[in-house]
Length: 461
Ligand SMILES: Cc1cc2nc3c(=O)[nH]c(=O)nc-3n(C[C@H](O)[C@H](O)[C@H](O)COP(=O)(O)OP(=O)(O)OC[C@H]3O[C@@H](n4cnc5c(N)ncnc54)[C@H](O)[C@@H]3O)c2cc1C
Image 1: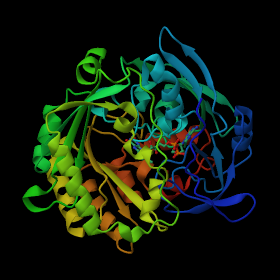
Image 2: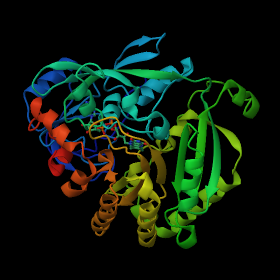
Image 3: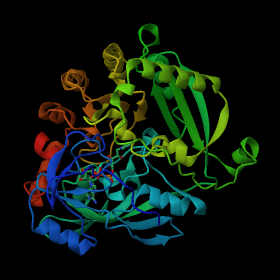
């Protein structure tokens, strides 16, 4: 198994036990006591004896979801793969095993995970707790759909098995429940067969947002689809995009498009890394405009052509640059991810993009995806379009995002908790009708005051 990812814990040590910890966005930072028990029994002890505790996986949630108000319990000590049933392709792993670990072991055997997020450096516990989505959510649903069952350590002391037929309510509350029902110790998940390590990708251009949504809609039979949006384009070009559709390549695809390639070529590991003192001013309007233009033109040159892309750069392009989150400098950044219901998506996303392009400081990493319905009580997805953008922390950004929240709220949309570090309770409550049911479950299992992250305290979950 490959080692656990060097990760997330951004540590500004303030004492022997208490550290300052943040998520991937390096904003906000809060002090907490970080505990790292190596066994399930150790985790149980941490939960039973303490209040203000939350689980932490690889720390890839952007905001304050994986920082406990008093204690943060790392799952990275739980890194063993338990069993694999070759007939059903079911794999049982401890919660701290990462997507990277699983793909490194199983791609050479012709198996893949049916749902993966945009980084492979997430743990299985974190993937379940955020019910993460991939580029195929509109077709295959979220990570919850890949999970058969899991074992959950409760704050009151017991361990329960949850599935769609056993402790169903707790199962639904834990999918997307952001660690607020207990700590997942291990899970059984379903893998899917693949014929090669490659994806057959086609790229298209869309001159504006309407055209991008038309293309995504017309191509919704593709397994994977995503649009990269140029957030600096304005006027008639507002929302101009590159649209990517992809399928797992068959042997025949590889024979036709890349006979020189190995069927199951290993992933290449990049050594690129952003230094700690990366000057944030390098990321300015002019440099981003130049990058966007180059990127768009490179995509346009490939328009309509099929090409093979290795699974690693296809699904996880940002993983090639270690610590890329440092490009935003010491103050950190927020990732703003909203979803807007289908019938209002065009109008509201155009308004959001217009405001963002006028402001001019969203990153080049803006992504538009289709989503289907979510599986958990407070899973993020709903049928519609999700837009994701990064913004460096500045003196004015939080007020600007509060205004975007109003557009999202009025449209019946919501913000993704795994990316959140700043939304208000009112925004959260208006977006998540399953909140009452989650609160009931938390009360029944005695988790309300025991399992508390900075996110749950801020949002009153
Ligand atoms: C570059 C990048 C790209 C991303 N792309 C996507 C994407 O495409 N789609 C998407 O959905 N998300 C995406 N994410 C977000 C990421 O997938 C989620 O935040 C995921 O939850 C991170 O997993 P983790 O192991 O790092 O968990 P952490 O960040 O450590 O924790 C996240 C949440 O899970 C809980 N948790 C962690 N482990 C356990 C456990 N064992 N038991 C119970 N609760 C637990 C924590 O309490 C916390 O609430 C991306 C993140 C990055 C950095």
